[in-house]
Length: 274
Image 1 (cartoon, rainbow, N blue to C red):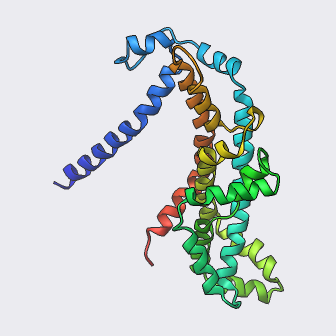
Image 2: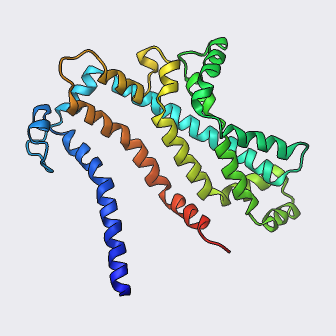
Image 3: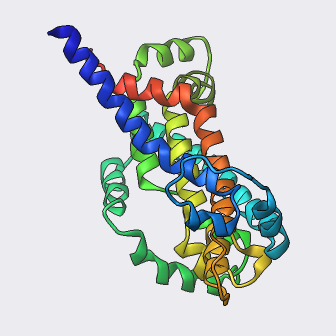
């Protein structure tokens, strides 16, 4: 009976994995398929006569490399900035005693309850007053600080044994040395988790880049793809759109694969009760 339950569990997991992987596989396969064959043989899993014309046409028709570069720059800087600020703020809230510490942290938590759409108009007017519309600064600055990152890092540092830091102070380390040499290296799993979430969120961001950019050389991939799909055409080139979608998913998959070990370690660590 136990073996049957184990078999049933593995079978369920395999079916769930297939159901999640199949759409991506179909997107990848159809991106190398001629536009006419996509609908004439929609039920086929494997398509013959694969071609790379869809990818060639995409780079010819739109500045996809510019969109890709803009998204990559914005996502990388946003991720690095958010990780640095969240780690420092989280450590300060976890280890330092200062006036109104709990009140300030409560305010940060309250910001997590506010829908991002509510902040769009005030942020837009602020960027306009600072003359930052259609610049990288407008795309990056509002995303550098987030309540979720501060909360996540604070919770990790609260669970970190104080004995390690006290030993470092006895050896002559000051506050910054203790943070950078002891606390931060130990927080790599949580940092990787925050970095993955931040990168994916920034990479997929659509509404804010759409509002603060108005030229092709500043558009990000999601905005560029939406404009490309909505451009005035007699027939939508689904093969080319699928090719663009494949290109969009490559960095996200790459970032997850790079941080997979730390991400899984953090998930398992959170599920263990000592």
